[in-house]
Amino acid sequence: MSRRLSQRFRRTPPPLILAALYGVLIVIGASLLKLPSAATTTITWSDALFTATSAVTVTGLVVLDTGADLTLFGQIVVATLIQLGGLGLMTFAVLVLAALGLPVGITGQLYLRDDLNQSAMGQLMKLVRTILKVVAVCVIVGAVALAVSFVPRFGLWQGLWEALFHSISAFNNAGFSTFPDGLVPFATDPVVNIVIPALFIIGGIGYVVLHDVFTKKTWRKYSLHTKIMLVGTGILIPWSVAMFAALEWSNPGTLGQHDTAVARLVVSWFQGVTTRTAGFNTTDIGAMHDSTSMMFISLMLIGGGPTSTAGGIKVTTFVIMLIATIAFFRRQTQLTAFGRSIGLEQVLKVMALTAISVILVFVGVFLLTLSHDGDFLDIAFEVASAFGTVGLSRGYTGELDDFGRAVIMAVMFLGRVGPLTLGFFLATRVTPRVRYPEGQVHLG
Image (cartoon, rainbow, N blue to C red; front, side, top):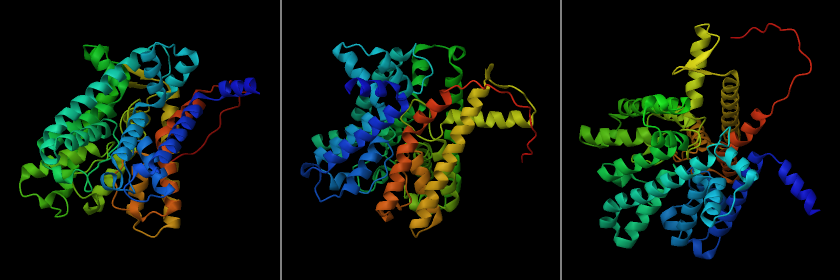
């Protein structure tokens, strides 16, 4: 019996095993949050499961006041779930094994390869070491820097804990905050507006990019992936910041409440860069214009970088989709970028990822509009935020019933682990035994 189970386990695709591990972690986290020592009030299993799912998928949508409804133990549970979910379960397991001097093994490397969304195993251990260094340095430095603002306001020990919690949450692009109004009270705080964005930009750009930046000294030596990520991020950040400022400048519910242009630009900077991945807010998201909310939906669906703590379809997917579209209109038969060609398999993967993402978001919006009353834009914004594991909300999370929470939890989970399972099926090659004559299909 044990041998059969072992054989079935080995035959199970690594992405499905990893998805199951994420599910197990959610159940464990929810069980811990249900303990009397974890909460200051009575919370339901629905509350616990939603909070655990949001933490493990590093989303940040909440049905509880993290600072008021959870004790210090409960907050530690949430922070641990965020770190495990953001770092990746297999990455964490490999780090533990390496610290104990135990071998990872070929099976573990296979799971690690899929957890990090890699196609080869040659550079895995180097990448894991880079991840360990980046995580440790960023979280510690971020906590120390945030303590400069938090300790004077909350006292030594409370301030240090708030700094550590928000550093973990920011680096992992989780968007969880122990403050009831998020980071709105720190809207113009210079430390918060520098440290928090720096943490979630580093965490969301991807470990592969960071590895290239740390180990390769010149632009020419960077991989195609790194170049696309850096250029794509370098365009999206100014675009989102400028658009938010332009759309919300005179809105009394957001930027208009600030008297000076400098304050408005500071808030625009923070809210513009946080939209694609992190989910923190220094202004009232529910008070934004509909046009701004639509822009935010598009940015949340794009997300951050592969092998990062961010969600969405990823910047590389979006860029390659644009390159393929331009190539089609130019009648080009080969896709190129930065002196490198992009294979047909990559284009097909982009198409599949985009199609599945659109279908998933559409189904989520349909189910919520079918079962809930409310503004359509609020619902669409909620689903897009869940899929992109962003965590921003127009105030609709609290309106969800148990079915609505289940839908959002499923979208959050699939938004986080869906590419893992999809990657396996895309990697499965079936050699056609019969070749058929080409047919004509009218498109567009």
